[in-house]
Length: 456
Image (cartoon, rainbow, N blue to C red; front, side, top):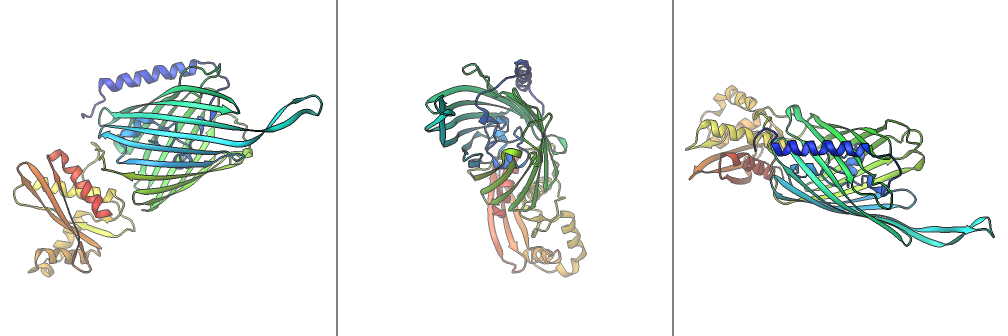
């Protein structure tokens, strides 16, 4: 993919603009299927219920973000809502290839045992005659495609049914989204329109528009902001923050500010908060979302990632050995050796491996200049030692837990990368792994796979 937004992207953006105009040209009024405004995703809910930058787990999430996800995933979301009302939402995300992905989701919101009352002039004007049930059901199919290194578009179609006692209404609707990633300075932008379609028995659909931005402030802190407006309710401005104090723990908080009175009562109706736990390929997320006088809601999401990792290239990302420092175990990556390759290529591959190891958030990867300085400062003590013993000695000077050494070879145009992870204290090889790259373009993918294996 080239770095420019192609003609196809411009058409998508223009279409979205026209649909935005049409949406807000409609007359405000009561809408049907209001449950579609609920975000069952605990992660999104905890961050102010922002949806334009979310890939899955919520019916209003932006389908344009789907192809940027690194792995397939399945998630189960559960929300305890008001008056014994529960909302369950199952979502599957799959990749068709690196540039395309899809999701399939099913949602069910229901409450039973509601008291039926009818007009009765012989009593106080009404009488109770048993009970009835209420339910909403949702089926969603989404698709997203990257059309450049920076931009993707997405579309999703929904079928919704609402049942009250013996009466049922159903409708179809379409949502469109756009997403910019890999922008300079770690910015991301998402936007779209949702729930476009014909009226159902004279009622409008809960259509609306959203636009959001996100920025990775530090390796541990993500900030997001969004403005969303529905056809029948007030426009809302939202902000959310995600903080990762440790590999397995994620703290989240958000604020949802209605630009006019929403009649839900006083503080803390606008505050959201939550916690995430990363357990390898499993993650568990919790969100607390209060609704003022209506009460509080609690949301849980369980996600399982699986399958091959799809590496997202970032053309603005400089390959550099300067890696983030924190309290994790130190690891030093020595430059790969080679017999028949240019030194510049193996140097670049070594730097990519350091960067990908840092991206796993498992280790603190030592700056290569620090490693080289340690070698220079202890030349006398390293003299006469075998190569591996000398590398282990350097690791001890740096107080590193592990060192990584390896080689890179070119066999008939295919690059083979093999590495050893060595425990500095014992001097023994703790892990060995290798990958191959069919061409120079595949080196980053191979390095990322090696880093992922070393971090497990």
